[in-house]
Amino acid sequence: MMTYYDWPMHREGYDLDSQIGYGSFGSVHSAFVKEGPHTEEKVAIKIIELEQFPDHNLEKIRKEIQIMRLSSHPNILNHYVCFTTQTQLWMVMPLMDCGSIGNILKYYYRGGIQDEILVATILKEVLQGLEYFHEHNQIHRDVKAGNILLSRDGKIYLGDFGVASNLRVGKNAKTFTGSPCWMAPEVIESDSNNGYDFKADIWSFGITAIELVKGVPPLIEHPPMKIILMVKNSNPPQLGKDDDYDSSFKELVNSCLQKDPSRRPTAETLLKKRFFHKARDFEYVYTHLSQILPPLETMVNIPRSFLGLVQERKNSESDSWDFNVSSGNNSKSKNEDPLAGIGTDEEDPLDDIQEIDD
Image 1: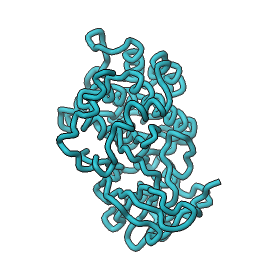
Image 2: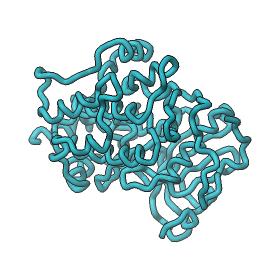
Image 3: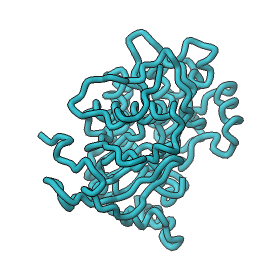
């Protein structure tokens, strides 16, 4: 069985190639492994500049590492190893060499993906990851196309656990966090209500479903504060008879976008919806999407001549890949478990950094 010992735990063990992503506190690079059993294998390395992080934000990094470390599911992005070097944290991960679905929408499907089978397949894979997350008392809190990653062989992964949290049994989350367009109403009102639970992810999943077929989420044309007020005070975005989508897709989306969280289905129930009968496997995603895309390094700086190429080929049927290092609001709630101290064979790469009090 592969362990973190199989991977170099020092920067000299990797040969950085191209920068393929960025965030407020670091960057993402493709790289080649230089030593050990994975020599010459290509990986992604997320490099976080720790000196640029306010001390209280280090807990966010710790949470992300620990959640990834404890997750074992084919639709959850994991990491191989993490280590610190001087003032940087290096997180070595599988290379998602087609980037995010969010960027693919932005550059190649600006009007949305019209292939219902492809949409059903992507959404089902994400939902399977969410089901696993929720079964293990974890809430993602930032489900959106930008955090759905695609490998070259057509496999779909849910990534970016920087604002994810572990919910203790019988407890709700209260932190105001996430991305405005995808944020559930109860998250916005978390200071004035009893908080929120896994059903907040189901709302975000419904918004993501609309994002996939329209190219953008609802309300994206408004500034963030107006979006938050509209989500809080307006009726939820529902698909009606004027929306030219399959009835099973409309039913799926509308069931997710209920203002009352108790009326939303669980991830397990959603997977039984009729729309997912259309879903195929990763080979369909490879054939109808992955193999059409250019190399990831090319997609970081997309030539204008390539824009729309995928959409044209499919008619018969943030500006670069961003792991969202800085996504979400970083406020902490004393009612939430920061996942600190969870047992693991791997040493915590942040042990040498000042601990953060709850």
